[in-house]
Image (cartoon, rainbow, N blue to C red):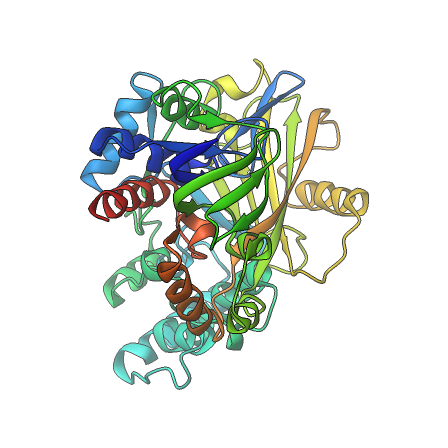
Length: 435
């Protein structure tokens, strides 16, 4: 079998690449997906009457073309929501983001947060070493950092925040003005902050219809599932694919996690192997729950910065779409992160999850669990440490010479969301057509 462009991975970026290649040129392309369905991590499973995603997958659309594309793919199967999220700390729930909404916290905590923030306004000190910890202290002050920014991000990154830089945060950590911080300390303000003030989500089927709709627009046989790539010969321009044998290609697009792709590709110069070992990520452990009670929460999701809770976030998918849970039931997803060397007993973690959910009042002792599903994401959050940028520069310089595109959240080894994956595919297709 041969093709002009072989695309490894049938997630959103891989499908988008094939879709846009079809629209832009007469080049042939083949998408090979190791899993049983398309979507990558943006897939959904039906479990005992519930539709579970692999953690929260919400559509935050900002680019005009991204908006048009998603609406053309999902049509009437799309609902828009205004974000309603909270932060649970000090025994109460405050609005998101924490830095603009301390109203409702104990008075000493509010005072500490206000004093620290105003100090950054009147006596600003630039971060000394480029670390996320120093950046938080310089941007928000010691109070906001101590009560939310540092403990929450330590839960997510699972390593000292002195080792994390600020390249990832972009629009994800908004800084309000001093007047907004003061207003949010004295009143229950309702102003929305951040990149995710609104989001879209399918009315039916969980997030799966997005990938399915994109795949349905490809040519018959252009995307194949249960086809895992076991080896890539970059010089011979061939790939070994389960179920297909040898596939010959002219150009290669990788959307699989970059370290995994490098492990099966060759020949690689020695510096590439060294750079690959400097790419790090965290695992995400997500427990999907179906509970026999409607409206366990009115929120879309809740953040938990305090160490006494074993999870960093709890989301309520049945508040995105009432059709992902049976009538009278709720669908929850509970997330925790682990470093690559951290071992975890899932039964033990599930017990601690349940204790934490009851401890914060989300679940009642009488609540019955109707469905459960563990989702283990070996590549959860790409770690933005000091090694990442120079390692990627070395790797991508080599891949460009080898005529390999590596795109998407994990192929490009970055922190992004679904719209970004779709646009990555479009941009990649345009590059391929231009040669």
